[in-house]
Length: 218
Image 1 (cartoon, one colour):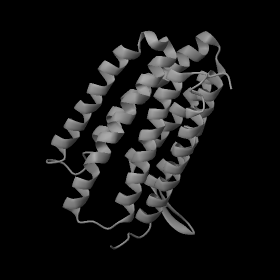
Image 2 (cartoon, one colour; image 1 turned 90 degrees about the horizontal axis):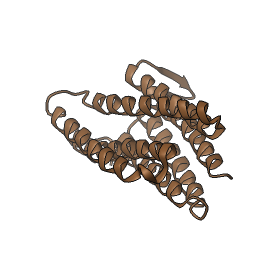
Image 3 (tube, helix red, strand yellow; image 1 turned 90 degrees about the vertical axis):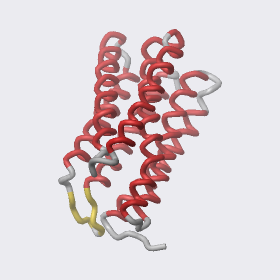
């Protein structure tokens, strides 16, 4: 097995760190299940999918693979990422309407995640940068979530939702950084836009977790 070199290897390391953070927060959120079982459930799924995607991505970035193998290897990750975005929107809709909207949200968003994956699967046969489909899907979902979160934070004067909104805004900034693909710097090791994407996501995840925890009254 041959390992990659920076910036791919530093991307793998930052992906691993993101996965560890998401896993830690997953267990912290699970601790809220006695107080807020549904909230703990939907947000745990979100963090669990993020953790899985990050650890999977660590392997993809750390191990040298042939181009055809790498394309095949990314496909399961694309599915997980689509589901993660869908579950994130479900979690935000729960913050808005509670259990009244939960079943409807799941019945709409999960199939949307499947449609997104099929679109990526088809486009992967025609273009190299098919991952732009995920960026577009994620951006639309995050834009909707941000607008919803801000409106709720203002109308309810809720600091928990303000923290979540800050996290969502950070996710959108991270997505923009990754889409531009122009950032690269050296700080002992070489880093690129993917590593910066992961660093920003870490801050976003912490902000969202603090919002979830505060909304649960802890």
